[in-house]
Every structure is written in structure tokens, then in C-alpha cells.
Image (cartoon, rainbow, N blue to C red):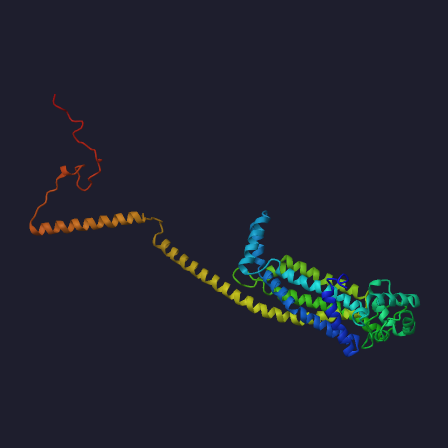
Length: 412
């Protein structure tokens, strides 16, 4: 039993039990599938919210990332380094949005097994019994199966009631509840049947069963286009420049916008093609999931946009304050240029200013002493010989070793 355990059972077993509970409670496969799709999307909402926050965080930094790429076009290492620093400073993970978007895919892929294997997960038969049911029915009625054996359980689940006696005789271990099969009828549409794409085929019948089955894949693809368009528009609304102002031009021409534009059509077209090759129940599941995301995506966007708008308001306020300070500096510089148009400047070094201040103080003291001496009648004679240069006001103008008699005539 332990060896038979698979990692995917962590997802398929509890969700399979949930789908079985819903089916046996409602006794309607379509209603059970709708509730199941809503429950799955509700469970994935916290993960989708994380992915949405990460993608919006990366989108809003698109102008700054493009600016880095323009400044260093030939230096990918520098681009990567500065981009990582930008995301780190902004509290955005470079892989956060993609990683959280990848997790739902890991969960949804095993969930398809729950939908395409109704005998295993809704009727809860063992793998050996399921294999025998399919083998017996292929011997009795091979035409009920499609070329794709991947969906044999859906085909077999519809035919079980018609061949209940043969199956009971061939497989004694089959459960009585399994012999009743699964009712795939939903609003007159057989969700177990593959929708017919060619309406001009000879097998096409203009009744609600065919028209309804045809519309389900179309609605599924259409809901995906609309949901991705809404998501792209809401993501672009948070793209702001370094000042926190919305940058619509960058949002329109960014590489992400071009990629999303391509994905917006490629994914739904792929879904449409798959919808006409598999049972209608799978398209119904996709349609309900798309409608759910179409409703919740704007709600999550508005929630996170309020957070980012608050951050952008702070950035804008800071940018405006820096502009105001720079404008004030420029005004002061303009006034200085107007007061001194010739650009003549004086030496305003700290050392020079201190020396000028000291000289002024000494001159003031000397003037005061001279005035005091004059009032007292004291006449001071300046002794030029006590001064090395002979000029009292410039004592060192001839050098400290100046000797006026050095080259005079000497007595023999």
C-alpha cells in the first residue's frame, strides 16, 4: 500500500473525496462540478493573491528596469545587478510572482485526473476493477470509446448502466453503486460527451444537447480572454515611474505587455481546441474557474493597488520635496549670478578668512594703542632698524637674512 502511494495522491485523494461527496449529495454531475470548481478556486485564492501581488510589484517597476537597460545596453551583468538591487529596495522578489503563479498549476494538473477518472474518484472503485470495467465494455461496445484512451473512464461511466448485468457477471467485485453509473446530464447537455465542432457534419443535430455542448468550450475560451484582458489592464495600472506617477506609455510598450498580449489569445485558443477534443465537463470546469478569477482578480487588484498607491504617494511627495529643494538652490544661484555678473570671486578659504580676521584684530589693537598714546602726549618713534627689512609695515619683505651692508666697501 505504501509502495502504491504517489505524490499526486496528496492532491487527488482529498479533492476526489470532495467531488464524490458533492455528486452523491446533489446527484447531479454538473452541479457537483460547478461547486467543485468554485471550491478549488476558493482554496487557491490565497496563492493566487500572492502571485497577483508579486506580478503587480514587478509591473510597477517596469520603467525603472527599462531605464537600467537603456543605461547599460552592453552590460547584462550590470543590468542584472542593478535590477536585483531595485527589486530588493522595493521589497519585490524577482521570482515571487512567477513562483506563486506556478504553484496553482502544480495543483490543477493532478485535479484533472479527478475529473477525467470519475469511476476511480467518484464511484471509488479500485484500479483493478476500473481496468476490468473498461476492458469488458470495450469488448461489448467498443464504439462508445474515443481514440484518446486517456478519457476512457468518462466514456465507460456513461455506459455502465446499459451493460450492468454483463459487468456484474464479469466482475463479481464491482459495487452496486457503480452499476448505477454517473448521471452526466446537466440542463439537457451530456457533460460526458465530446462537443462536436463541425456543425455542418452529417451527424450534427440542431438540438439543445448539441448546441449547449458546442457553447461550453466557446464560453470557456471567451471567459479566459476576458479574464486575462482584465488582469493585464489592472496590472498595467500600477506601472509608475521613479516619482510614483503612472506611466501609461511604458505600460503600453513594455515587453511584458507584448508577451501578455500574445498569451491572451494563445491560451484561450488552446483551451478551445482542447474543449472540442475532450468531454464537455472539463470545459465547464474551466469556464467556472475563469468566471471566478474574473470576479476575484479586480478585487485583489484594488486591494494591492491601495497599498502600492500609498507607497507611490510617499515617493511622489519625496520627489516633489527634492524638486523644491533643488529649485530653491537654483534660485539662490541665480541671485548670486545676478549680483556678480562678471563672476569675480574672492578667496574665501577658512584659513584665509581666519588670517584676515586676525590681522584686522591686530590692526584694531594697534590703532587703539596709537590713539591712546596720542591722547597722553606720548610720541612713539618707529625704529626702522629694529625691523629686518627696514620697513615697519613689511618686516619680512626683504627676507629674514637681508643685510644692506653685505656688499658695501670695506676698509683695508
